[in-house]
Image 1 (tube, helix red, strand yellow):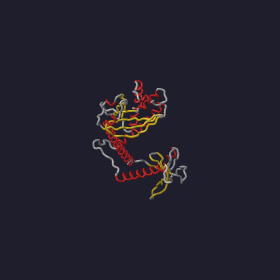
Image 2 (cartoon, helix red, strand yellow):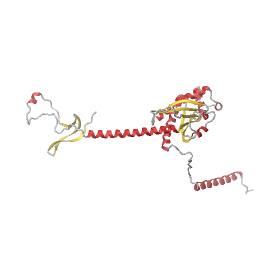
Image 3 (cartoon, rainbow, N blue to C red):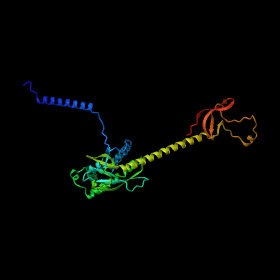
Image 4 (cartoon, helix red, strand yellow):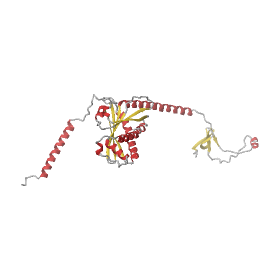
Length: 334
């Protein structure tokens, strides 16, 4: 009976075998198959990393602004964080929508560009978060009811939903303000967005995914940015950046020109030895070799004035048989 293994010993042997097999398999796969990223030629990328990085910066700020706004509006701690930015076809976003989902259409108008048929931005919020916000707006604790989430929205809930969107959609204008002047305005709510085609199914869109946590309820805010809007945004941004660059260059040239003109300016400089107050009669009787008492010690500082303003102080002396003043400091003006 001493050769019989216990159940714990059998489990330990099986775990060791499975772990060893897993390690060998992972090592073999890691050494034999290099990591490569497949490129889909049917759906090539339309926007560069730099442009998506710009969108990322904008909506990171938007997440912080929404969190602060909802916290003050609901009197409840709210956390919003940017999770990901994805470039995909519109049909992928459309297919991910459920039958009971509601999408808000928001118009984005670039200042100085008159386009009436611009494709709208679409915003979809998780039902759990919407019900939690509505519960809080109606005086509740802000907890989402799982049973209500399986039902459709009532007319009152739709009005409150619309009110929430109207509060958070203009905030996009504030975060875009650092890059471009864009005005965002709520258009309408669509209760069956899968049947409404405002964007071509094969058109490239950028999906901004935000996670939102309200008390113990978590959900997502999905923002769909049509590619045509982003093209106009990036074109206007590049144009404004070029204009700003030219303006900076022009200002630099003007500064250099002004500095050169100032350098060539002629200024009157004089050294002030001292001052004496005499009558007009004494002045009339002054002769060569007369001495005026300036009431100043002979080793005292001499003040050098530029255009009647004292700027430097120095000592009186001789340089190459000429009277001269050696500067030894500046005059500090209070």
